Image: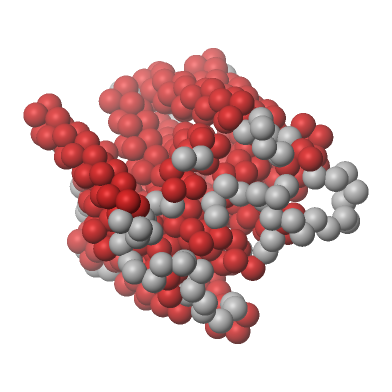
Length: 474
């Protein structure tokens, strides 16, 4: 839980400090894009290799190494004197965070079983979600209290004490390393193809191609690498060697559809948070502290609704995710209406209300969906299964952050208080609502695919009754 909170808080807290960082470093738009989205890029690239290495060689040492590198890279970024140093440090920090989080998922799968595993995975998802929601308020307090020239540096340093505590706890309490994969041979070519495909897919959304031909070239590269990866996995399986993507993952419709739901929801959530921050500060001229106050209700609401999500799961099963996504669509559309029609004086209060609804939606959707997805990952591929899920979310984050922010920036015209930023924010909110609508459809399809299997709704209502059966047995 500490690792999830540390690595996700680090990214979320920086969003609100982007305007002050840009002025302090003299950074251009491309530099800022790399600082923000480059973290997700490196995070996503490290997840699958990290999960595979953890399955093969044990997780504790990789966890400790990753967290130590994360700490050192964070300090380097916070003390960097130019955009290049900060970008490089953030890339290293993102890779270390990906290595750590792939071990977190695998460890939870290894240590917990039955109902306890579902609760542990759910708590991990909730912890990360609440940390991400708390990031903007904490960043706003630091920037407002320490000033724009220094506040953004302390935003980057905020994760340092968390990382030290996590390292101390992990060294003492994590179980000794043990190999869970049946085949000790690492699929090096598969890892290279997977990383190459991820990199080729994410880079164009972080740094937009200069022409249509360049964009087509990137798209062709993605298709070629994806086809090569699929062929390699089949050939490796025919030769009796363990492929990088376990057959149980590749053939599981609930796992695939649930991962797609997580991608759409995660990407929409991060993009909506970033656009709201930019709109409130650059579009309306609000201070960082007031922007933080607007974002705080989302974190509180998400924490409360996450605690109640499991009770709702016992009553209606996977329809809990459907309810959460539906509320998220309503919150995004309500934000668009607020931006267009509410007078300037009432906007902070109105946005705080829509953020509360968005937090409730996230609490009901994130944890139950992730838990259900990972129940379809076998023990010998627990690290890879969790890594693929998180890698997919990071790809979605890079794509959605670039696409939705581009919608806002291309539509926003005029200075603070004008109609241009309001219309631009409304359009961006509608795009986020569309992403959640896609997630809603996929969630309904996943419910149909999971119908023959018993669901979380089958958990006995007696809250203290222990169920030690494996997810497959249940």
